[in-house]
Image (cartoon, rainbow, N blue to C red; front, side):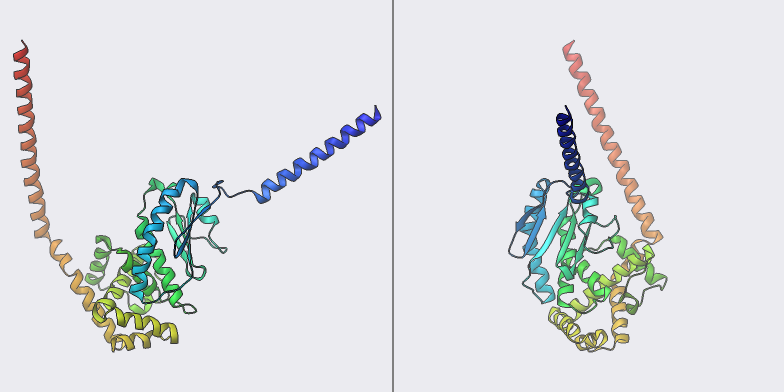
Length: 319
């Protein structure tokens, strides 16, 4: 009797220890929230990590990423041998979890690049509200950050260069940014170039203007002085870290004169906005819309009447 009780107690203790060990293992060594293991798709220049549900997207990125990479490398005039890692995070929690370091980027962001780690993290459709994202455009933007970081390794990339060139490559230009520039010119609140070098304003409207100006400055440098000169400017700055000196070597102009020419370049491109938004033009457009709506309504009414007459004739034929 005693032996049986002792044996049962021993078995209970072993079971209890095993259960507790299992609980501790689950708590401290559990898999990430995505539950599914990451698969790895390899191309010539990329490792793409994804879960089963994102296999189709991963294959799409694998085919487009090499073309996009080649274009960006050609535009900046610099290449590197290391393969870039791309993680398709299947949830918001996973998106934050796989970010290296202690700080995480805001939840509204759809992607982030870490040039020093040669890493890009993208939120998959399941981790985005509505599930819609132009992945080619987003990837282009983030990979441009990688390339700029690589070519300037050891140097702090000017914010206008990093963001402006990323927008230039991904063609991130729309009427909102054009309107922001137009407003700045009309109200004489254009942000000086020097203030766009270290960081962007925290105010949303001013930040929008900063992005627009950065895009315009990079476009100005490439269009006016050419890609070869732009490549040399990047190499010069990477070598000596003298931003103003490198710009002067590229353009032959002191920063004050260069900035004035850049302002003129921007003004030409936004001066047509006030013309099409003037009161006269606005009322003319409204009149056109009204006339179009009137004739469209009449056309629909005429078709409806013809349909009713046809139905009435068919009913009479059946009687």
